[in-house]
Amino acid sequence: MHLQKGMTMAELYIHIPFCVRKCLYCDFLSFPAGDDVKEKYVEALCEEIMCIGEERCRASLSSVFIGGGTPSILPAENIERIMKCVKDCFMMDEDAEITIECNPGTVDEDKFRRYRECGINRISFGLQSADDEELKRLGRIHTYSDFETGYKIAVSAGFTNINVDLMSDIPGQTVSSWEKTIRTVCMLDPAPAHISAYSLIVEEETPFGEMQKEGKLDIPDEDTDREMYHMTSKVLSEYGYSRYEISNYAKPGFECRHNTGYWTGVPYYAAGLDASSYYDHCRYMNTDDMDSYMREPAAGPFLIEKLGTEELMSEFMILGLRMIRGVSREEFKKRFSVELDEVYGDRIRKFISEGLLEESVMPDSRIFLTERGLDLANHVMQAFI
Ligand code: SF4
Image (tube, rainbow, N blue to C red; front, top):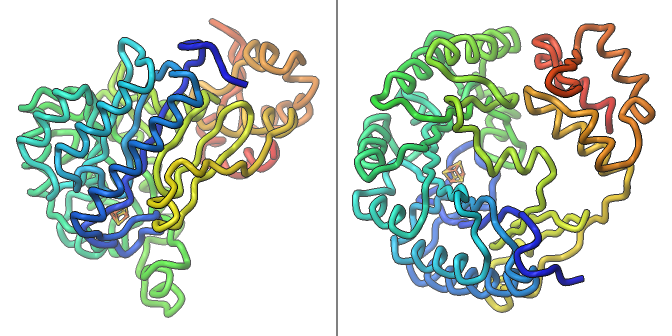
């Protein structure tokens, strides 16, 4: 069914699969490529964006996220071209959040100036650590000083909404080096508006996965991981950041709209290699084969799964509980025409009695994870699958 022009509020994700070189822990679809491949890819991407815009009747976008990979590896004119295409093919919400992921060592003054001119209003830096030794162990291409330079240029170009990605559980990392990383980033002037703090997940098919199999990966043990985790929110709150999602912290008013949309079930379209989208209660996926994508960028997306009511309810709970404010009883009833307690009452009562969930009544009735529940979030979420 085609929707009326401008009726749907949705998000758009655009995938740029290029990186200078592969980090040792990375299992995202990203790789180095020559200029000609990048150019052709952007051309294919624009063709796909046009098709999505047409298919979705120029839906309204509340956010656009250009992610990767390393989108900032592309020449600025490529990003301008992509942004022009997005604006031509969709209605943009007046205050749409438009983010681009940047890696230190791939940005300069000209790029940031042009990003702003074409409407991008949020930068997300992949820093991971303020310790050069740790960066080297991760196989990152940059030093902390490269990040600092890029950050300052972004600020002078006028960006006020900047996220910095940080990573704990890096091989050889200690609680004090993690704390030093957090404090160093918080003391930037001006401080970033948003910080994402994830812990390293060792994926099998990566060099880290291999090293782990051979017993050569010295990652912090579970107690250290927990210590780092608890310290993160404590230190960040000292600097005025509130945790609004399990791994995300923001200064007031700077919560990431794009990710919040994802956690609260806003439909999202996606363009690019291996990009996944979700709308009309269905999940879709693009091909992960570069040749096929370049040949026929608009061949996809391919239907992966149609979600039934049960799956939608489960997703509402699992994603919603990631948010610190949790899930709303009213919202559940509005979406599914049934009371939350009729479906999940037994589980909710059990977790409340165990101190893992809590409920609030003002301003609306919500269920959310307690401090202890946040620690055992996976266990709680399992129960809603
Ligand atoms: S920069 Fe990001 S996407 Fe690229 S290889 Fe490193 S972790 Fe992967």
